[in-house]
Structure formats: structure tokens, C-alpha cells
Image (cartoon, rainbow, N blue to C red; front, side, top):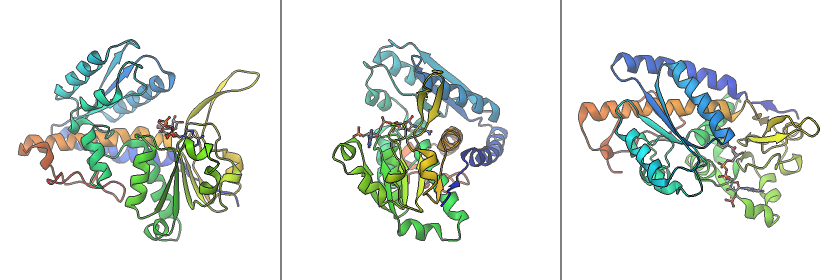
Length: 330
Ligand code: NDP
């Protein structure tokens, strides 16, 4: 079997076209969506991500601002920056880029976010809503994984809901930003979900679980962790990993995923590449969440309810991918 390659760039371009129209319509109605990023230090992947997101925001006509802080910034100063962005009415969504300096507690910074602007659902309230199955925002990377899966499964002759319901879906990696929310999105689709982490590998259990997967999502941050021996014939494999690896001899850096693409493509029914897979969709999804946040903010302004009581009519919302915003019982 030679796998179908799920093209993330094509899916991202399609989402971007849709989003451009949304931004224009909202701006004409007086709400120009605004995104802010907070970055501390010069970690290469974070700097590159910030640059891509800035370009995309500007291209779509969104307001964009970046709080670029030094690598030795204090926790109090990061929280103060977040507070300024919380108070800035031009900003609807805030992304705090990882890694933060070692002395800055991520949890403290996340708690400082206005939950309405927390587009990556890292504030405990939004993480809780997601866990309860009533997300206000779905973090962009796991949302992109399931956008890929939903679209791929829809393109096959089977009913995607039925495929999920009869699938063993294995997620390798359980970080709060990728692996855990991916498990929640898989459960929401009625898949039978198994979570693997570094302990599964150390205990020699990884291969047994991954070989049983009909759908395999890998987000471990370990270059080419998953080889052909880890994959069942005909599985659908989504590779989230982005790992910079120096080429022997030249020292040139290239990006590889967590999956050995060439080997696994011989066995899988479908596979996402790195680069050109989940990454491009994630970039656009962050802006999609920003637009969603701008709509929430506009509805708050119009109705003046407490933030718990939001209900926003949405053509950006569910689309079979993300649930509607939290209801008043949140
Ligand atoms: P984290 O380092 O936060 O989490 C890694 C997870 O993988 C942990 O749960 C860890 O287990 C698990 N893990 C590590 N090694 C192994 C192993 N040998 N076997 C099984 N599980 C293992 O990373 P992230 O979740 O933030 O990111 C994961 C990857 O995805 C990275 O390559 C990152 O660059 C990429 N990424 C890509 C994005 C995109 O848009 N495409 C966006 C975000 C991330 P434990 O919990 O036990 O430590």
C-alpha cells in the first residue's frame, strides 16, 4: 500500500480564503479582529512561529501586536504584559508562546489571561470547558489534526462518524497543548482512545498500542519515533512533530516529524507530511480562533452579559470540528 498524502497546505489555503471573508465582514461591522503574541527570548521555533503568525494576521487584515520580552524577564513582568493586552480593546486573542523562561511559571501566566481572549484554551476555565465537552476555544494544533482527519475521512466513501466509532485511535504524547486536547477531540467523535507517553515507551508498550491503531496521532517531539513496525497496514497517521535535525556532514538543519515518513507511507492508508502537514493549518487556525474571539467580544459589547453567558451564532463555530461556545451553565 502506498499512502494518500494529506496536504496540509491545501487545507490551510482553503481555510484562509474562508477566514479572509470573515475578517472583512467583521471589520465592516466595526470589529477588526486583533491578535497579540507574547514571546520571551529567542527560541528559534517560537520566533519562526511568531513571524509566520504576524505575516498571516497582516495578510488577512487583522490587528497584530507582539510583546517581545527578554529571556530573563521576571514572572511579574510577563503577567503585567498579559494584563496590558487583556485591557487593550483592539486585542481579541492572546497567544503566549512557549517556552517561557525557567523562572516563569506557565500556569501563573495562563491564569492572568482574560478567558475571553485565551484562544489556545490554556486558562483553567477554558481548559475545563474543553474537558467537559463544551469548549469556548479549541487549541489550534489539535483542532488542525482533527480538521485533517475529518476532511480525509469525508473524502473516502465511508461515513466519518461510523469510521471514528469503530476506530482504535492512539495519541502518542499527552501535553496540555496537543496530546490531551487531541484525546478529548477523539472522544468527542466516539473513537476508542488510547494515550501513550514516554513511560509507555520505557515500558516497551508503545509498539503494541500503536500497531493496534486504526488512526494514529503522534505528538511526542522525538524525531522519527514511529517506524513502519509501529503501524498497522491501512492505518491513518497524523504526524504533529516538528523537529529540527542537523544533516550529517553539511550541518544543514531540516525539519522532520515524529514519524519516519517514507517507511510508514508504504503501509498506511493516509499520512500527513512534515513539513506541509499539521503546521500550516495550525497557523490559520490560530487566526480562526482570533476571529471567533472577536465575535465573542462583539456579542459581549452588544448584549453586555457576563462572559459566562455567551451564545454566539456561528458559521465559524462547529463545522463538525469544534463545539459551539460555552453555554450559560458554564
Ligand atoms: P511536549 O514536550 O510538551 O510533550 C511531549 C509528549 O510526548 C509528552 O507527553 C511526553 O510524555 C511524550 N513523549 C516524549 N517522548 C516520548 C516517547 N519516546 N514515547 C512516547 N511518548 C513520548 O511537546 P508538545 O506536545 O508541545 O509537542 C510535540 C511535538 O509537536 C513537537 O515536535 C512540537 O514541535 C510539535 N508541535 C507541532 C505543532 C504544529 O503546529 N504542527 C504545534 C505544537 C507542537 P510525558 O508526558 O510522559 O513526558
